[in-house]
Length: 171
Image (cartoon, rainbow, N blue to C red):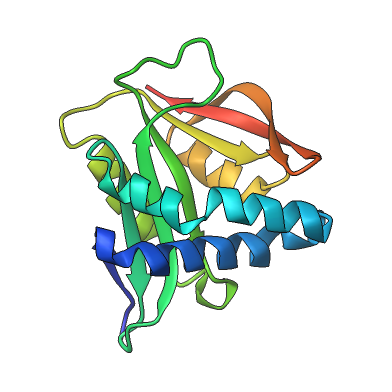
């Protein structure tokens, strides 16, 4: 049975915090000193921050669950806050989209991406933004096929480590 995608609610804060930290660690954890990773996870995926994001009507999150109810992925979207001079208040941003590695390449990631993009454009087309790690070539190719173009760069801090990130825009 195919995993389901559903909009997260405030009751999902614990699960969303957990899957965020788990997928970030699985994907990028090897790149950072343990103390930097731990501090970043506490800040970026802390329960209070997750609750606040879920309570914000301008933002949305989705969970991907197996038939047994296990959370295997998620996505988050909302107003763009990327550091680019052309970002406007009405612009949207795909902020995060992750699946546990064991569940990648089966089509659910694309379904999740399509769900998020549809939500971002539910009131009509608008400019959309994505920040992507400079070494994530697969994601860059995918977003390029969807009409996103590189329009800038910035550094994303994970503790003392600064990752080179690309800013992509569509529209």
